Image (cartoon, rainbow, N blue to C red; front, side):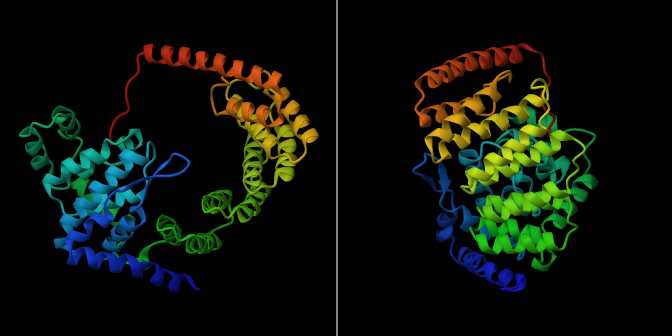
Length: 391
């Protein structure tokens, strides 16, 4: 199917759900955050895709009477982030915030403040101007008159000469451009991400592949395509794209080539091609800087972690033991082993091979690394530091 046909198909259900929500507020609980626990111990939101679909349909069909529904959706999206998303910020939250902010009602600043203060990432990425679209003077007056526990914090952020109503309006126009009112004005890359949020893997792959085909075949374009394909679990295709990344990337800096090769090895492992992944890691070793200290330590940790992760995937015991020995040799001299999960991978590898002596050694290293981590964190908390500024 063409991208245009897929776009029409994708919007049918969200538009139907939006009309249903408009007709009957009693159906709104079907869009509310609903926690479910997976067998792996993770928490997921059963209604996440349906809620985003309605938000997406609202982006293309904006009506004044939808404000109560938009407030409800922002509240539920905020709860989803509070319960499930410990870090990061994506358009599923910023779209909800923008659609509420566009109504420019002062009383909504409290909803925006809650969304902004979910995590470190939302504190930085969810713009303060969400709170000010009803007018700066009106917002300051509303906060001063409140008994909200964060009253002084909010006033400290919004009662500043550097904020003007003109700047807020300019920001609002930028958001309108980011979230266009017409489906035809969305980029294919945006369509790819929207389709993924709806659980439409094939459509998401189609949109992202078509987007990449229309762009220069640069490393940035290919990285975006590879990451998206891998997220959608099209791992064979992601491996092919990553090989292209390696072919076009600047090989003058060995660290960059090592990083790209590590990504390839990781994708090959996830695609259950352990033999190719190990060959790629041998190539990584040949370009890794010999110094394992400083900025290179992280690269070495990730390399050794990949080596250990391949041991349990090795089909014969003899080869698995050789790979465990090689991984152990690479581990020597790498600092801060409490980082990046390298020792967890080492323990799992030793358990799989059935080597009690090596397993005991790695568990002892885990204990020592945990103590080192606590010492470093304790020293860091004693150092004076300024917190991040809000935007």
